[in-house]
Image (cartoon, rainbow over all chains, first blue to last red):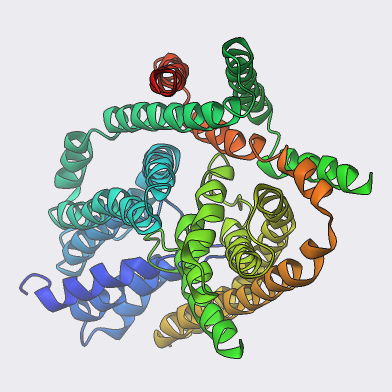
Length: 252
Length: 232
């Protein structure tokens, strides 16, 4: 039996974008994962309905990870299914591999994509939107998707190379280092954004000492809000408080 | 006007799909959504003005595991529609901008509740799909996924229609009722809002190494603008 044909791999790669299509609280991404891997299972277990059914059930079990990082697990799961179909591996190895990797890849992906790359792209887009809205939008989409799509593509290819290739990809990608770097860029851009806002507000008052006072007040406000966020206060709660203050102003 | 609402509903459906169910290519970010909705209602720049501030508000709430962050896509639909409508009638001056940004908060919370409801409904679809797949019908997985996506899309369209309608109504009927004095007083709150966004970015990126970088950049940018302004 030959390897998985290119058109099947392409189909699986495209289907991974719908991984969260049926996201639910019980199985989370289980239906999405089974849907994504289905073309590969159909190819591997053609003419073997019982084995196909067992393979499908394996992938309908609980699954949850970061959607972009799922590409690595998806690729490696296909490679493992190939070996199971050829009688070279134990089917239980697939479940063990998925469970073993989804938690750690979820944590890495959440920290990298949601905690570093998205804030960096967002603040860059927000700053450049002041120059021109379309420039801001393009910056946000390009900064995020250049990395996001590359991880989905290279991660899937690495997973298809087997477990060792997947681990090598994760090591070489250096997500921990990249997370730190992107957080640094986000902090610098966030600081620049806050500096522009503080100066814009300060110049309304006039007078060097007053302007400096407004700047210090702005820095203090950012610090205090950050402390509130660390104490699990939601941005909505801070905004609702401001809304109530606004309503009281209107009431007067 | 009906055509504009239809366009917003279609675009909103795509954005809500991008938010969770499909792609995740950031089409659902407030900067994109508010700008496009603003353009649909006739003013891209006004929408972008709201979107650029909303973009950073909720970054600190990460969609980790089963936690659902506030619906900033819905807030952006509301904000983009309200900003464009206000700019063509009463003007988008700081008081109106602050009011629109603050009134988008209930939309974000309503959207969050709707998102939770869709995910609960998806639980039933998933159970049915798994049950049928285990009874030797593999197509149930494909049908189940498509049902889930349809649910996300339909809810997204409905929410986009609701929030854009509320946004336009607010800008046309509620904001003009406030006098110029109220507008001026409300405008005093405006600088706090982008600072909240900056604090959100700072909270996401905060480490021992990045904290000095944030404050140092803030000070340098402020000092540079001050210096060039002083030069004349």
